[in-house]
Image (cartoon, rainbow, N blue to C red; front, side, top):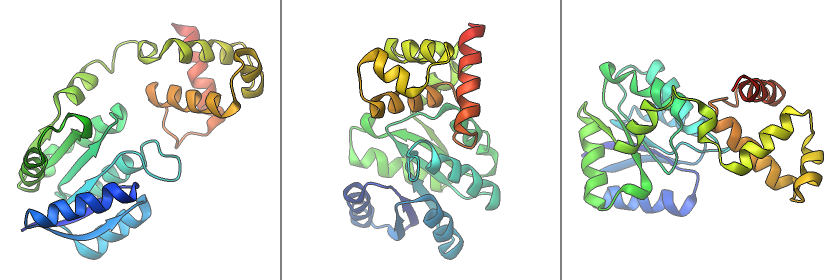
Length: 215
């Protein structure tokens, strides 16, 4: 039996995963929905493994994965399995670089075809193994290529307008879409260009434009 700390911001999925792990004979000692609670639960319970999503509050970008990297540093040897729909290449690489200090895994939710496959992967990570989805490997191998190739045509269009000095409001008027839609595209651009939210938005905007101009 493994003692598991589970971090997933979606309530129904969190409860479903907790019930699933219990059915397979494991104990979920804490099921939380935000990064601070994840760190506190690990300190309190000293689990056998952490299972965490990537996107968590407050920005829903890569807080879960960043917290996992921090926890691996604070608790050497702590097994961590990332279970997500999303590959955050910069922090994924940092997490996987710690495989010499204990089990690490990164699985994509949409590519898990059987429940047993997920549970088996978790158990292997808890035992000190490394379980990585092939798509994660592919993304990490291509991360040193031109990052602008990751952008959709619409994202490249918005980045071009940003390079012209347009504000979000001006981009909204040009493309005839809502400012909320523009904001989502810009956040996606920052993520795909590996510009983490630890940098201020203004600084990320400048760096994104510089990457575009250099290309």
